[in-house]
Image (cartoon, rainbow, N blue to C red):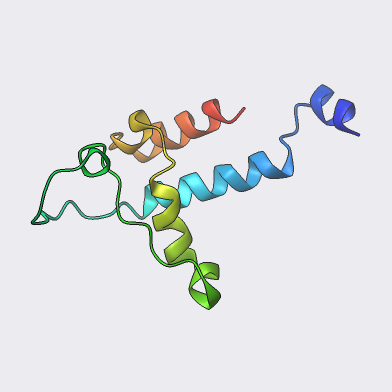
Length: 94
């Protein structure tokens, strides 16, 4: 089955799910609010604090998108144009 999928260039279910998560995370960019406190490696890389994913909150799109934001490559995070960002996501997950 995998060989047929590869021959037809159909993405796997995992790749399709990751593409949807990355696209939603990019659409729901966190605001660039100045936060007080020390500048950490994560904060300087553009990461946000991971929300609590236990229980019902872990199934909400808002929390999943916020948690996925930290997985996005920097070039996709910094993209301002929607079409270019979606093209980069598609290209990376091909």
